Image (tube, rainbow, N blue to C red; front, top):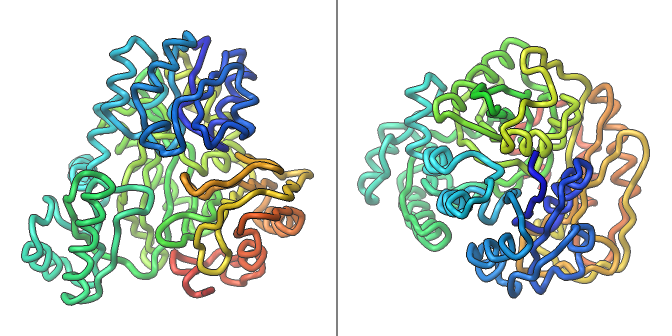
Length: 445
């Protein structure tokens, strides 16, 4: 097993990785920016290294500073968490070229799945269903218009190099397409350094369902159930639950088999997620993208399968067998995660500030993975995620009841936060019935 681990991330995910590392007797090393010096993850690490100013380009995305911290502390491995450099193939290659262990899939898999068009084509060749769309980037606006006419409106205009719900727009007709194409292309060039755009069919009433996969050290790929991720704002998730209330046993079997094929197609190792769109009316599903990293919502899978995914990641990276029997995976119970963000609960606009009060809920079936505590300052430099409220129980009904009580008990004063939104959601009949889709938040607003 790895003996020392540098966590190249911040906030709740750094804290969560550090917790598992220390439980396993692994020396945990944190890196932090000047803005994060007082956050809990820095104090909880065995060692912490300042790597730069608040600007992420000069700190958490600064490859040279992170590698220098690894060298100075004698780190044996690097875990990238999610976001920042986690899906940067060049960083993964550099880490391994430096003689360090990369806790994640290899660079070739990251490259293969990082380009949305390439990923779609790979999945289609592997027998994974894909939505109607372009097999090459739409080189210009005329090409986009021609592709949309063939696919049929409405269409989704997507940055080929995008991810995390960014770089996407919907066009219901040619006029809207002309606007969205230019907008998405400009955004993609600015954010990802790649203005390639793909056009694919847009489904207005669908659910977003994903499958957790794990590529084992012996070469096998296993699927650890599905997660329902349809509660979203601006194409970014707010609530995830497992199992999905919309997935039948027959559909689950098809989903998981397709996800395994997706992983096998790129010789996948370590943790990853195959994301799909699902039409509950027809029970058809389509490949959306593959995230070559640990997901924000991994705790719901951990509960349902009774495993620690970070531990499994470390075991794969160390060349060790998993803690579970891959041939006897048995899910049980229900889990739900709510992303507690520093944003107003109506328009979901960021609201940084000093945390004057921070009281976390507790009790049976309640877990809080937090990045902050009372007295900390939420700065505008990073993602607005404050904490993840994870609720577990034997049934979905039990989880909904526990979630309602936990949300009522979660007290945050200072920065704007979306806790009131979850109180509203948990009384929404569409959500409680399990019949919701990706448009539920827009209907609530």
